[in-house]
Image: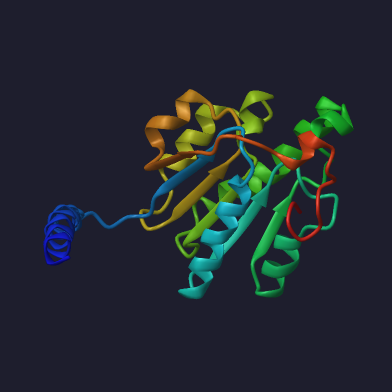
Length: 198
């Protein structure tokens, strides 16, 4: 038994030494760009979890939602009650609206607001929810977006969510998490559940 304990202690000591070295090497202080992409469920959920964390540290946060905005949203209900501003397209999913020009105009209205946010040094965290679709559909110019993202205030963090992230985004992201779909209730005929799925 003592031998097992000693082996465990040695392993944990080595792990701690490696982690301590990484912590000591991380000396740069700046806001980050976090990309949450992939075909799995949970990208927006993860973004809003980070928003809750930021608010817990009294950070200033705002949210822009692309595609979403026409139905009851639990995250919006909660965070707006805490003073977080939401900027939404007020448009159905693109397969529902089927009106490219109308959707593009609505996307541009939200994007123009985002440009203001990305220049505002008083905002600590911005979530750009489902923005990856805007590049796929060419509603927002990817190069213009990268320019604003690159020139934002140094301390500002930005979270990008959505499937099929444009490859041009990758070099400008500090952290990229790809959420894959292993199994989804919807595929088995189970309705989206209020309070869990939306």
